[in-house]
Length: 141
Length: 435
Image (cartoon, rainbow over all chains, first blue to last red; front, side, top):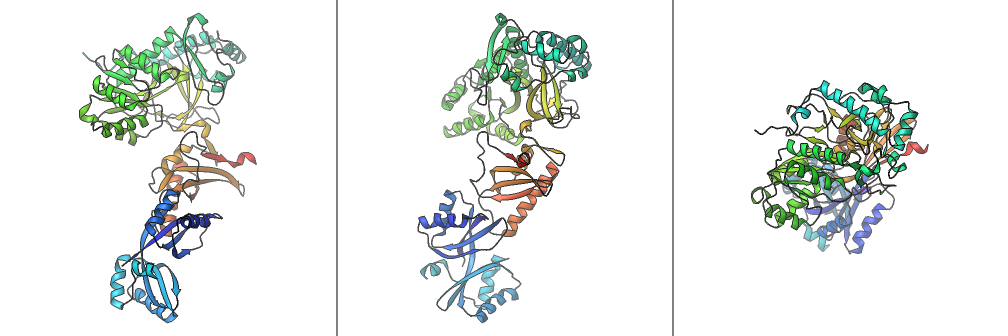
């Protein structure tokens, strides 16, 4: 149902993002999606990788503060209309989106998102027949 | 019949009598001190003679003695007795300059041992006990200081000295050790090794009483020691300049350490103004020896911060109690007229399990305003939610403001970017000094 995401504490310091990516690059971890929002003193770097557990251990060994957590990945047509419909379903059910990021391969879009009530996401997905993709599916892309 | 006091007439002496004794001994100490080259010059310069010090308030006319004075007159400049009466010396390691040397006559050693015996008796040790001392012996006063004190009490005293934990545990078991003196971190080490050896200290040893000190620790750590080992653990304070252990010690109430006022006069001063602080407020501990003849020290600035606990102790001893130490006065800084000690900040930070143990306090003038910046390392990232990180920062700020009365700016930083907690880490950077 959910996929593993890696959240990394990111001090707002020139070169820090590069250092973190370098650590992961050394171990040949593949980055499927990444997001950093702009913040003042620190932010959170969010990553979907080919091996979250190993990436987490690597960062930990390098004294980087990180956390593994679960997020939802949806797949859909990459048109604004479809996007709007999908997010509308959550709004309809009273869920709000805390953050989301997306990427597309050919005409397929993938949306990674976190709502304010992760326990209800499955129920909403079933009700509106949204296509949730599993970690295995994501890694096969 | 067993009494709770080793020297009831001194330990429960009426305050007025105790203060009269202090004056008498202070005048005598001044007479002795004048025999040393250092105090001869220092006291005549200040116009002090034993006859014009008649009350404890007069004490404040005597100049302070500092560690620098000891270093500058290394090694024997403060010795007041003829050298043939000096029988032992102890010295600090001298990592930051000339070592400080303290000389003792036989009388001084006897009085010192007596104070340590008094402390050990106070927490229940008797001549039937087996006392194992894990202090380093040699120049460090925790070794010989406890050795002579426990022998004076009549306990079987095991000079196990520091290290070799397996052997320490063998001694504890073979000799039926009932009491140990150790620094708190070593107690935890002993416990861990006992567990590895499948020894349960609660049932497989005769341990009942631990004496801990020489290393800052919290009451929670003490309770943990007591629970793990099935013992009572008592906090102890001493310093080589004041002979060594046996300056102040907890009684069975475990609420503050009685400072032996027949042997020392204590003052608590503001380290900036050098004026006494009101009773109960934190300041620097200043001590004057009252029964040392080889090398008396007058108004010695210990640099240790503590406060006098107000009120009488239910144990019946009249010697006042000092609180756990709050840090060193050298580390104190002043912001907006408030004295702030890094320990106050550390105490708050350590309560947050989301934070690591390393931090740095920077004070700077920004737009004519003094500001305190506290950078602290995050432990593992505990959330994926940015607002929770901000919430954490707000809560730290709120608790710090309650403690230090100034609103600091909190910055969460990556692990491994702050000075490490081991050794003498620099915790405070005062950039105002460069402006």
